[in-house]
View 1 (tube, rainbow, N blue to C red):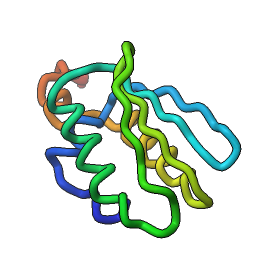
View 2: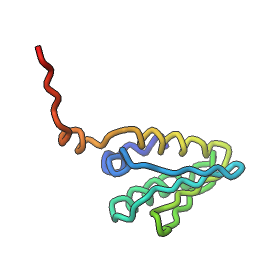
View 3: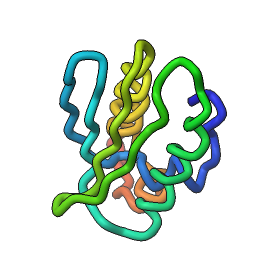
View 4: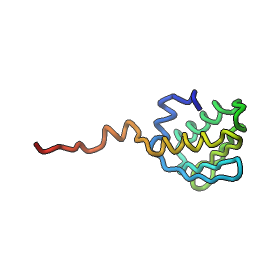
Length: 105
């Protein structure tokens, strides 16, 4: 996951709510939505991580609600941390659109 630092990938996932299930040494991470950018970002993460020896190759599955990112292995919890960190991070585009707060003097 250390090599996943492309803004195009991260910006698509920032601020996006996820659902996580643990099954023994595996995790299912549901990322709601079906957009092309979302699918491409998740596919790229799976591609980057497929040869890592700390966990199994990630599997991406399209479901009615969005995409399930499935990962198994001793270090699979790192993906949970990754997706949860991005969930609480705002995309740069939403920051510029946020209303400005004026402070009274």
